[in-house]
Length: 115
Image (cartoon, rainbow, N blue to C red; front, side):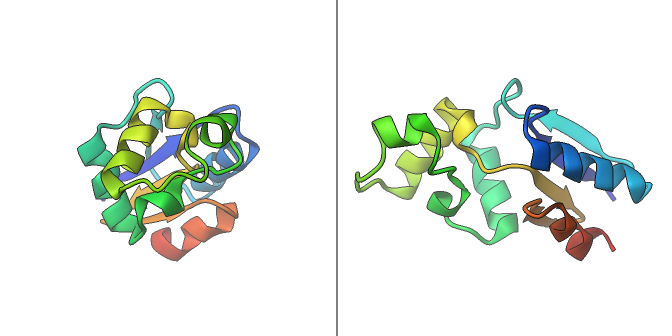
């Protein structure tokens, strides 16, 4: 079983989730998604695993969102494009394990899919 964490090292919740994965002795791959930006199709696959709509994966407190997108009526495709162009908008951390995914907020959420 492959486990992946979409991680931002500057984010406290992301670091806590990474630490929790280490404590669980789970082998995992780290994707620093700000550097290795997921493609639009990859984002859609992640959303499918999360069972979420694009708007639900967007960090709405980010300045990029407030300045460029807030209050606009955007399609799912436009939201996916916004996340691809501005990966800071992607909620984090995301952990994928055995075709299931959760957002590690709080970090203990990951226990639902790895236990």
